[in-house]
Length: 282
Image (spheres, rainbow, N blue to C red):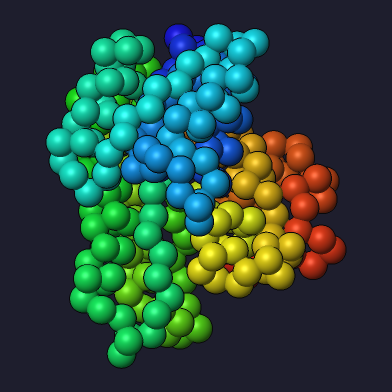
């Protein structure tokens, strides 16, 4: 097991909600290159024509990335809304790798429909996947996190900004994402005495994921979005930060610059990448 606060993640185990593609997959690939094992709880068991990859192809990609470090990955097909599935994912980590050290709350439902047109079913889905899923996975993992020498919770959720421009754009979605943030900051305060650290990470720019292409802005917006690897590298930098922060919300490019990575052009997005929701331009 690696020493807390080192850039090495060898022997550490991550349990993530989602991770079949996009930002979650990028984080697990980057972590595998540093030696971290992973268990990903995700729903995509069979290929979907609208979405790239499955939980099984993700495991293959993570395993290939960890070839030199010996990192391994295991897929658990399930839904973060289902308590039995979450329990199965945590149990798989303990049985396969002997414990778990890091929870990454990555799974998220996105719907930007205006309030008057949003169905109750879609509203419930966002709250259940986003805020409830964050609470359920973290709570289920807690007994095992408490046994880790450097337990961490990392939630992919934004800094809380109550400016009308953010509150008014899609209130139901905003509530679900801010709920993830508030829970994570609450975990940091509540669990400090148990040695569990908790932080949030959010991208400065939109990220070229299936959600951006299919839901938000199509290929044009994707061309102005950074690659998911920017979040993968930022997550690993944060998880290995020797200052051991907790109870904070971070933006990816701030984390990378603090780690000495200043050339962000390698992550794409062109000369004027689109700023993401809930953050101001750098």
